[in-house]
Image (cartoon, rainbow, N blue to C red; front, side, top):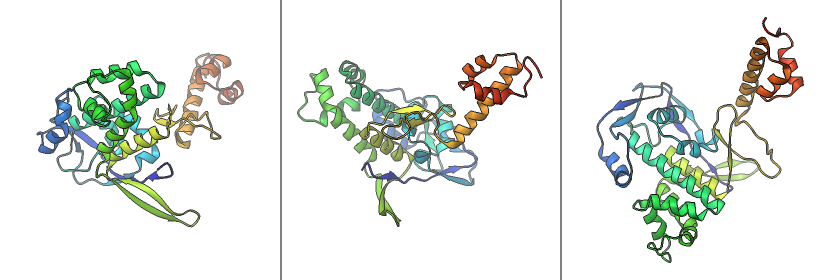
Length: 298
């Protein structure tokens, strides 16, 4: 699986989405049933709707553009966060006429956030915190899935040893549940490599869970891009270990931003050493940026 790539193209309306009050659909009730029994689903009547009904679309590959997109997804909380994410990456499922319920978005981000937090604690061997995490969700489907995945565990003990032993089983069962029937395999031909297989999720939601699963299996750690703050995998081995940007565009944008900041600081009377410290650059670079700027004013 580690050699497989994810093949996902998402149509994103050029005019984006809007938030709109609507009715709760039967499909929403099915998706929210378990979650709503133990958590606040927010307002399930608020939906993400296409801003323009007959809109043009831009085909995007959000998982390729952001290898850590699942972590960004796990951090969404407010309706405005969901709206921005959809405008940038597309809908979770499909462009249906009635849109997508924010209650469904909240349920999925909650599940993803739980998986990310759980895996962080498990990698750190922090058994006591894992136990507390599951105790907070004791009556939820997470605990049920955890112990039903391993028949040798005693759900009534619910101790550190039991939870840590169940870790790999729970991770597998959770992702299996999210990807059940929603993942295919395709292949492309390359003269150099022959037929190259790819995993093809049927929508963005399945793609996010698949991306999370691959990252967890590879034990990937993530940093933030210093320009757009998207998550990027932390490099290892012979690759660059100091990668600060997710793309060349962000690297160039950061360079221009720091240059502008340096020139503004110089015009306000800041010393070269002070500017270098604030824009996180070396003295020689700063001198080149501000050589035609008069200190303390133009």
